[in-house]
Length: 512
Ligand code: FAD
Ligand code: SF4
Image 1 (cartoon, rainbow, N blue to C red):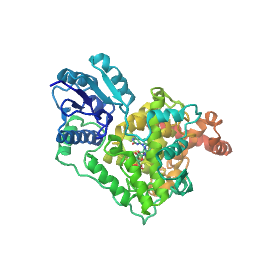
Image 2 (image 1 turned 90 degrees about the vertical axis):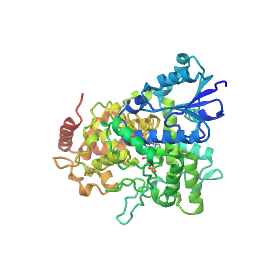
Image 3 (image 1 turned 120 degrees about the vertical axis):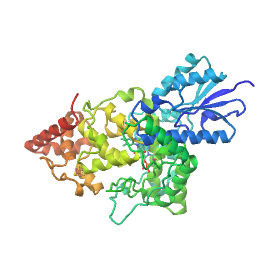
Image 4 (image 1 turned 180 degrees about the vertical axis):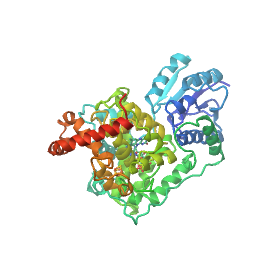
């Protein structure tokens, strides 16, 4: 029998329609799947994230085999495993002697760099096909970005609405507006109890992987107990259905809210499935639009949800591939401090931070506002070095892959790109957190205080941040309000806050 192609499926490429599987000849081709230690440890990934990926890979391999496809699966505990993609692909080429290797464009720059060297190293043709599981191709994004001074998500999103036809009435946006964000900033009232999201207790295969990961990575941050992520396309579809019927109608209203004891509010918890390829982004948007058309969910909720996927998710991917590799090196605010130890212990004493950090440890999940306006905002104000905070976000969330993590952290949360993504830093004092949550009432710090031991650290860190960057922000019209307030402030008050900030930062986030 003549050998066919070796078709590589990476851990976040678990989609039936993957480009690397197009034209697969089950009689001749071999699908190669690799569990390699390098990928589990290049940052210390949360154990739930490793279990999720390995379990979903094993389920995917089983499904392929059930269709009669030959799968060469190299398990993590295979004694012959050399634990890097490049050396494992080389071993597989030696085993199968294929006429060529077919892969899909990976989600991380460093993997693409490695793949580009394979053809020379392996001595067989290597075809890297586009990843077609997104709503915008990289070419579409490049064309949109070409010649533009500012790459604002909002304008990209409108192009995507037009191109996809989602939530459109002819040429006009449904409801007459592109964006209903202004309606989506409500605090969670006491009598609104979000329905729990659908969770998936581990089956036998997942439990086996949990034992393996517990043995192999005992020191990685995060708990394995309570693992309940969807690991198959079928489960991902069930999670989406449950979200659409139970949570979508109020997703918009409470999209920016935070609440004590409510880790997930009305969020969808589908990023892990989307990013692994278990769920198709177009299906998620279509399901939300259908709910609106049926009259089951209001437009502010549906537009808000569609914007996250059709807008933000596609935009950050486009930006990542447009700007890498230089993007990761930017450090516009010259941030140099160490990551505070409490990001790993969850014991900062700040109620809002500890809520986000402990749920991150327990679930490998925090919702967007916790990531942006609590842990991200803190890192921005404190001036934590980009590499340190990027590594943390990449390690601790079950949905984290560099194409989506880096722009969100580097660009949106810590403004390291100097404004490529956001026209101003997302910097906020305790007042914002108090407005959007009920954490402050139970915190040992006083959200109204700005100096002294008991003052909310977000307050003095905020003014220290604005004062530190006063000259840099002077040319940004969107920073004129905080700068005007800074200039009106009594000198003694500012000095006291700066002294408090220095004391706090030197203790928790020292300079190198
Ligand atoms: P929902 O709030 O229910 O939103 C629905 C979907 O929209 C999400 O599943 C996600 O696919 C998409 N989405 C929403 N916001 C964004 C966004 N800003 N960028 C891209 N997609 C978005 N998302 C990741 O998938 N992986 C990451 O590594 C990641 N890192 C982040 C780091 C920081 C500092 C910040 C501020 C955000 C990050 N995000 C990341 C975006 C966002 O926080 C998560 O997508 C979201 O919290 C996932 O939870 P959910 O499925 O319940 O989302
Ligand atoms: Fe967070 Fe400050 Fe509120 Fe405490 S008082 S919960 S530290 S914002």
